[in-house]
Every structure is written in C-alpha cells, then in structure tokens.
Amino acid sequence: MTFSLLTRATAAPALAAFLFLPGALAAQSLPEGVSEADVESFRAAVVAAGCEIREDAQATSVEEATGFDEDKLGALVEYMVATGEMIYTPGMPGLGMENDQCPGSGDGGEDDEDDDDDNG
Image 1 (spheres, helix red, strand yellow):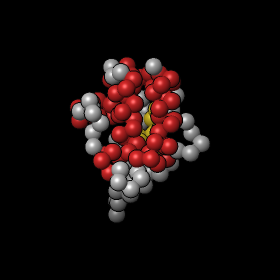
Image 2 (tube, helix red, strand yellow):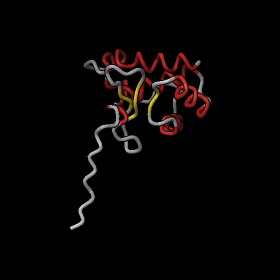
Image 3 (cartoon, helix red, strand yellow):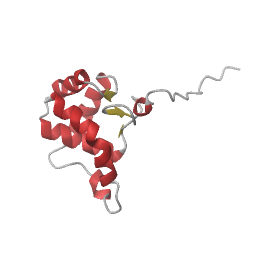
C-alpha cells in the first residue's frame, strides 16, 4: 500500500493540471466517501510526517496514522492537490503540504518570510 500512496502523490501534478481545466471547479468539493473529519485526520498525519509525502517512510506513517484504505488516501491526495494545499515541487518525488502548519513545505521550505520581529 505504501508504494501506491507515494505513486499517487508523484502522479498528482498531472492530475492537478486536469482538475484545473475550465469547468473543473466542482473538483474542489469533498470527494465521495470523504468527510471533513477525514481531511483533518489526513492533514494531521501529513504534518506529523514532516509536512511531506516524499519517501516510503512518510507514506507509511500517513497510512498508519489515518488507517484509511488506498482509495480514500488517493482521493485525499487528489483533493488536497486540487485545493492547492499539497504542492508538487519539480525535481522532487511526491508532494509537500503548504498551509499554516507547514509554511514553505511545498517549495522546499526555503521561503520563510516572518517579519513580525520589530523591536525598536
């Protein structure tokens, strides 16, 4: 099963291109059989795995943490790519998550621009 999750994560960019075609806005609604609680569980598992699904160990960690079957995991990856929360980085396998808990993970983690430190 681990290989399938990582394979789906790697194939997600082509899927995302298809999902963002004109008229594909419905693709951003929750997939059939997936609840908002499932999305939250998947999101928490990816955060716990380091905000990425790029290696077998990370995929296994997400699978074990959620307990979801291959089809649900695939639907969640596709949904998260369609919403822009999971991002493919060219030249890297798999996907990174990009949200408040994982800033910069989708682009390699080099873009931390936190300028809230104004002591003057």
